[in-house]
Amino acid sequence: SIYFLHLVADTTSAAVAIDGRAVLDDDSLPYKEVRRYFGSLGQSMLTLFGAVTGGLNWDLVTTALMNATGSVHPALAFMLFIALTTFAVLNVITGIFVENATKQALKDRDLLIQEALCKRDKFKEDALRVFYEADADGSGELTLQEFMAHLEDANVQAFLEHLELDA
Figure 1 (cartoon, helix red, strand yellow):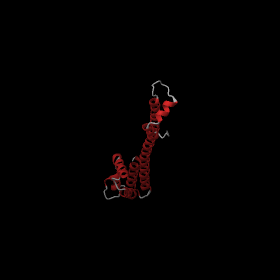
Figure 2 (spheres, one colour):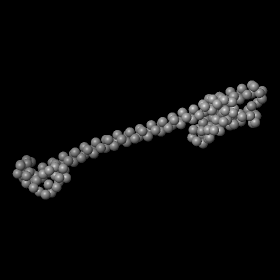
Figure 3 (cartoon, one colour):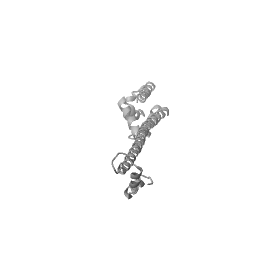
């Protein structure tokens, strides 16, 4: 915004030097429009903000710049500012979305690992329960006869099928 304010100041001071008239007081000259957009630092900032956010038509500003300066260069500088600002903002927003998606994917990966570990622990607990239930005399030791007798039970066979083990 300082560049455009400086540009307007230079343009109007050059016009005063050439014409010998007070350009700032002359509303008939093309400087009225450019002063409207870039007459002060605050107005310059408001103009640039409005142009970037869509609240101000770029054509109005570029036309005012070209009419006041007699050159297309300030209009190109204005359009370059708009393009760079827009791409910078879009880049930041895209970066935020990508970062959040990456974090979510890592959470999903960690969740899958945690679920697999829990499933494995549950499988161990269920398999151990089968052996503890097979110890009919409660001695803490499982004999082949106790285990084979336990495998004959229909509930145990169904449970082992659920664990994807063949009895």
